[in-house]
Structure formats: C-alpha cells, structure tokens
Image 1 (cartoon, one colour):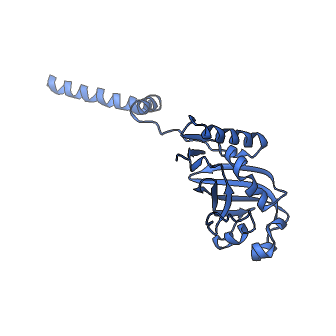
Image 2 (cartoon, rainbow, N blue to C red):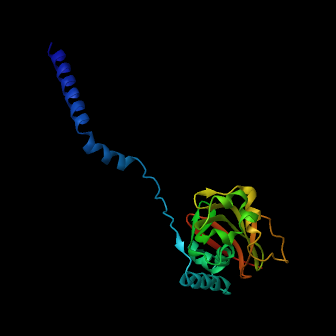
Length: 219
C-alpha cells in the first residue's frame, strides 16, 4: 500500500513539474535553444555604392596596388570603387546626362543604375514599342558580369536591363547596348556585351558576397 502511495506521489510530482515547465517555457526555452542550436550565419547586407570621383580614385589605387611587383595577388573592393573607375563610361554611354549613378553586387552579378533621359536610349530604333510606354527621365538598371578577355581588354556581359519598372526582353539587350562603347578590334566581343578597357595587370574579376574581388594577372 505504501509503495502504491509512493508511486502516486511521484506521478503527481512529475505532473506538477511538467505543468510548471509548460507555463514557464518562455523563460527557459530561448536559453536552451541558444545553448544547443547553432545560430544562422550572419547575412551580409549589400548596399548601393555611389559612383563618385572619390570612389574612382579608390578604385585606381586598388589597381595600382595590384600592379606592384610585391603587391597582393588579389584584392576585395567595394562595387562602387571598381565601377566608378572602370564602368562609369558604360553608364554615360547609355545617357550622357545620367545622374545618381550607383553600383551593387548581388549574387554573382554587378548591377549599375542611374537616372537617364529615355530619349538618349535611341527611341523606337532601340526600344521598339516600349518607346511609346516610357518617356522622360527614368531609372535605368543594368546587370551583368565583368569578364577579362586578355590583358588590357574586358567586356561587361549584360544579362538584364530594367527601365523604370519595366524589365526589357532579353532579345532587346543587344540592340540597346550596340550603341554603347566602341567595339574592341583586338578581341571578340559578345553581342550582349560592352567593351571595357582595363589595366593589363588585371587578370580576373569575381563577384560575390556583396563585393568585387580583383585578381592579379600573373605571367
């Protein structure tokens, strides 16, 4: 009989403890999770960098460091610095009156954006039916990769263009960018790419984690 009462008593204590744990879980559960559950890795917050003369100077300085005989093999630089130094002409090529130019790295793409005059983009010859839909000043966003073809020569391979809230069809990209830049006679440029002159010491460009990584051209 006493053993039976003892078992009942233990059961009542267990039930009471379970009830107490349930009603106080907001207090102890977060501490338990923090101790035994791995926290997710921090998310790198990429942001738009303005293309300014100061950013271009920093981009040039990074290239000069890369060119040093005993300089680093690679450098991580903000998107705005390298874009201001190498790709400002790409933005101006679309519209000489472009303002507020900025750059950002998202995933493995470099995006440029600026406010442009739609009339500078070539009208019906470049925009087709869209020329009657968008006009005035709009935000132009260009997305792509910077690919080094050989020492001193690169191309900005465009795979996405947005004008205001409109995403341009892929088939329209070659027609629109054909007006930008002078084709490089020394290398074969893809029809969806814009030629870009780069320092001969630049061997490769990688994009990711919100930044641009420059690699030295090692003979």
